[in-house]
Image (cartoon, rainbow, N blue to C red; front, side):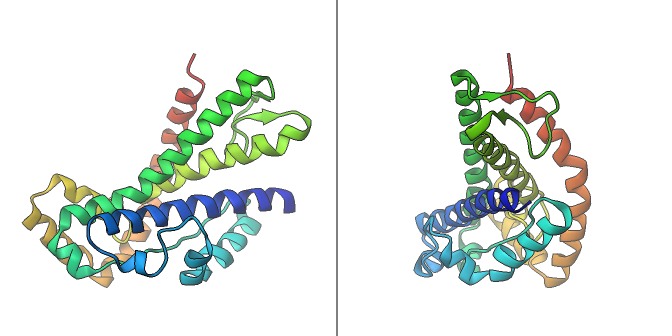
Length: 224
């Protein structure tokens, strides 16, 4: 359990750090330097942990002890004034986080297939959330790490793209709107009363959406 927890936490923290640093970098490219000024355009997890110690340390450990997988959060600050002035840039900033998770999932998929081609990984008889690929001997923990990296990033990408406040998808969907409509959408959904309702709805929807997404991803991973 300790070994699995260590592997999971490294994959979790890497995934979350890439997600938030992508937000910060995209915002800086769009003219908002709030997060970059706070030192969050970095793959060093310390600034992200310092900003959200509960979501990056305590909750992941507790959730792993209770369920053997990790749940948590981090955040990158941004300027609401900038968001209102440049809603399309704000939407691209929101999209950058899930895009970073997709990139990590693709990287994990490449490593899995390279390991299979090299003969150090094998496809398990039964694929699970923790075991997308298996390794023999010294390669067993490596196989488990890339399995977790693959599924963890699919999970983060899928969850964050749900179109409800306070998730990234709430901003991403404004890419399909006119700018004035996007501004009105932000004004409406940024109300604090929507936050709790949004998370409850996201938790319900996530259970319906993620497992089909994972099944499709596994089929693509082992496409022959």
